[in-house]
Length: 153
Image 1 (cartoon, rainbow, N blue to C red):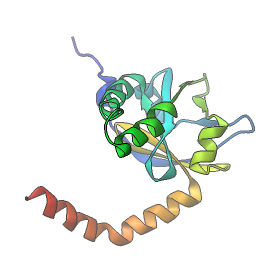
Image 2 (image 1 turned 90 degrees about the vertical axis):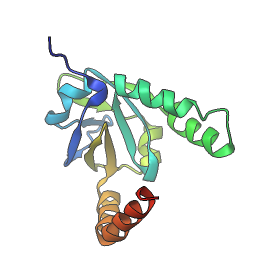
Image 3 (image 1 turned 90 degrees about the horizontal axis):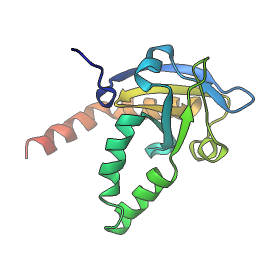
């Protein structure tokens, strides 16, 4: 019998959404089924938020926790991602509530971009996303060269 494996979700694409007056944002319809009825939202890297399906989060949290008692970098990253995490229920309109501390961390105003990044979804301030993607687009060839260099060692 075939079954869905939410830990192997594949989120792709970028969507523009706005926050409502109650700090809720709609998740893209294409992501809702794979995300499920409840998601984990946490601080991400590059000042965005990461949104995980619960099963994928459990695996990610276990990988992060391995470093929680090691060096300062591992402890810091563990604290950033694990202590900052919160569970958010997806309402009947496909919205999740983003707590103020997470909105502040990511510099989220009204207009945001929700981007699918493989096993997670990221929430970005629209202007920050535009700046970030312009820089990545400009430097993409150099990044590709670095990845080729490190993978062939």
